Length: 65
Image (cartoon, rainbow, N blue to C red; front, side, top):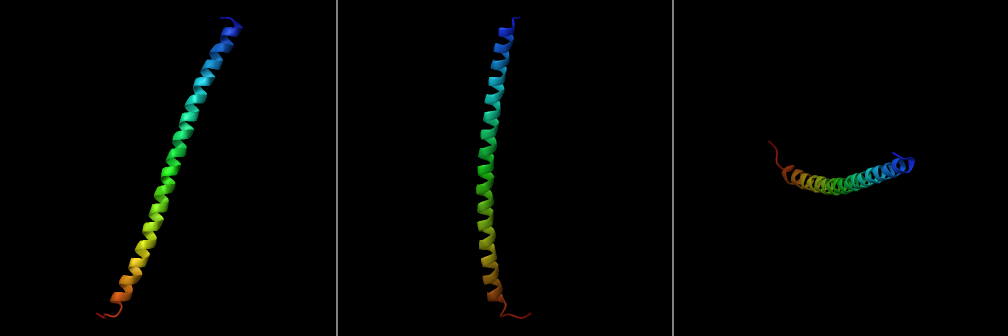
């Protein structure tokens, strides 16, 4: 094989590897976006549960066992 052919083959291989890396980075970014949305939703649910707990505690605190 000639030097030019070796260089050409290497460029094709590097291009393919670069495309694969770009796809994987995009997938990671999408997963991070999904995780961020899930974390935000979880935080909202936690705040709602805290509010409900306080209301329940205020309601039942009048009763003594």
